[in-house]
Image 1: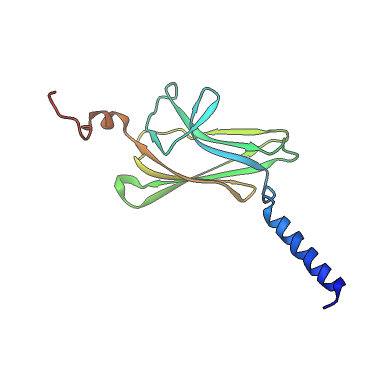
Image 2: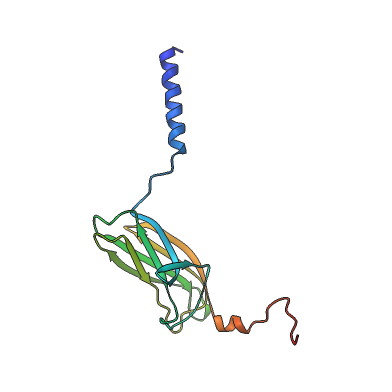
Length: 157
């Protein structure tokens, strides 16, 4: 092997190694996607969210933060996959919106409705057809949890 060819191969190997160490370029316009309870201008990301219909007490949803102000409108779609009626199967609710030019943040409230089931809900959010958020949360009855006995506690003491 000639010196020139060896130098070329070493140079290519070093370039590949340097490229592998660099973080991947961000895909799509979304820098951060959060799901949880809106509180004090922030999103408290949670694994579990109490079921409530009172929007004055709690609002929940997702927030998309874009890398930079949008140069063109972005199509936003979401799917909420949750237990079906009376515990039979699953039901999927679809929604869509559009992020306008110049937006840096998009908040979308996911309001709970009477009759919505408790249990594991999976939320997927797509921006221009690409998955930006794919998370599961447990929706639970806070009043029922308060009535449950705490393990390790003795009653009457």
